[in-house]
Length: 91
Ligand SMILES: [Zn+2]
Image 1 (tube, rainbow, N blue to C red):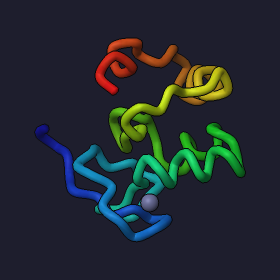
Image 2: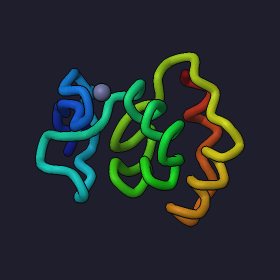
Image 3: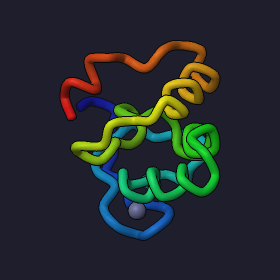
Image 4: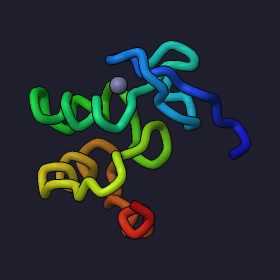
């Protein structure tokens, strides 16, 4: 993917995959999927989206994870658009 960089997870230090850079994070830092879910359980998805950006763009949901209804509501609120259904089919 053009314009993407390899990210380390700002939470656990692990591999966070190759994604677009989110401006709220230091260069080459993002979040891995399991940390994103862990943070969301404690602070809510709105906090994850604000700190780490869009799932499927700036970080990736773990495989097999079906987002909760709170995920969709927070996504719509944060990005002013509904979560693309094509991304759910890929997981
Ligand atoms: Zn992590």
